[in-house]
Length: 208
Image (cartoon, rainbow, N blue to C red; front, side, top):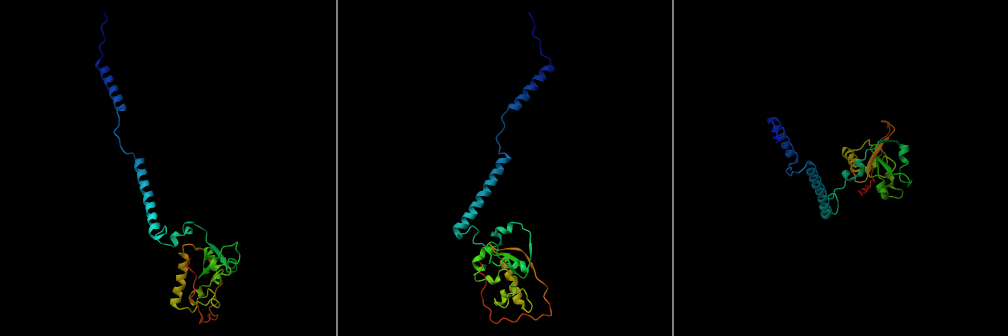
């Protein structure tokens, strides 16, 4: 009769260790929320917040931006473009008489695209005289025949602030946008000042 070989203490220890490792590997892990699930929850919450924000805006104000119309609702604000530089002759080409070209106007050197307001600035429009030129002086004197010039000499402090107001009007408009600068020849400081305007009209370009 053969006697069964008794396992040595070392073999017994190795065997128990192997069983412990296998048990640890196959043991079920406790359920927990992964980081990807947290990210999905946060993103979903943000999306619904945005939807509710704009939805409430439209229901209450009938606009998607709580009634705000300005620079930050203008798509051109977020599109980087290279600033254009015009001579007075070049700017005149964009006076709205050519339907294949955009409509530009300038005020105190800054050139703005006002194509979206073609009904006002294109040929035949009420403010076509502003298109294709820098008529900064006329904006504050109301003389749309004699003061269609960028020469601001002789204007009062209040009128100069008015010119600055109009620059901001175009720069912060919800459809118009700045495209560059117009380079004017230097004004001879010894030349006569523009004549005072006594027949100015209180008209101004429509905001829409």
